[in-house]
Image 1 (cartoon, rainbow, N blue to C red):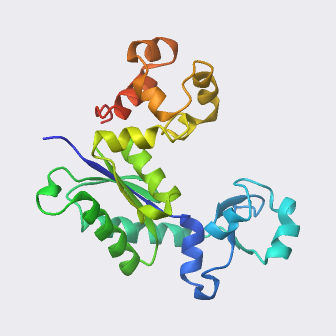
Image 2: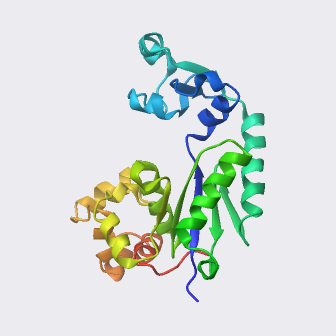
Length: 238
C-alpha cells in the first residue's frame, strides 16, 4: 500500500494567535516582533500584502506602521506554545499517526484513509475542525511523499481557489504544479542552493524532479538526490 502524507501548517501562526484574542483586528495588518522587539518575525496576510518583509528591523517600517495602522505585538511564546499544543492534540484526534515537525506544522499519516473518505474531503475536515476547535486557520497538502506534501501545502497557501486543501496524490497534478513552482520553494533547497541549480538550467521543481539522480548526487549531495526522488513520488525520508 502506497504511503500518503498530509502536511498541516498553521497560516501566519504567531500573527493568527494574536488575532484570535483580538476579534477587532480580524482584517487589520498585524506584525509580531522578535524577543527584543527588534525585527519582524511574523506577519498577517494583510501585512504581507503591504510588502512588509520577514526579518525587517521595526524601525525601518515606522512610516508604514503609521500610514497603514499596522498593529505591532511583542512575541508571546507562552501563548504560541499553548495554541500549538491545542492544534496538535486536535490533529491526534483526527489521524492515526501525527509527526510534529515544528511549532505550527505536523505531518499526518493518511495511508488507507481513502477507503473511508476522499483525501481532499479529509483535508477539509481537518481544516474545519481545527478552525472550529482552536480558532486558527490552517492549510493542508496531501501527497505520497513528505516533500510533495510540502509542495501541496505551498499551493494550498498561494492559490486561494484551492480552499486551503490540495491533493497531490495523482502524478499528473504533481507535474502540473511542479512546473509552476520555482526550485527555491522546494523543501530543503532555498535560495543559495537554487542559484547553483539554476546555473544547470534547473529552475523549477519539475526540472529537479526530472534531473538524473546520479548527477544530482555527484554534483550536490545525497540529501538533494533524495529530494529529487521524493518529487518523483518515491518516499525517501524516514
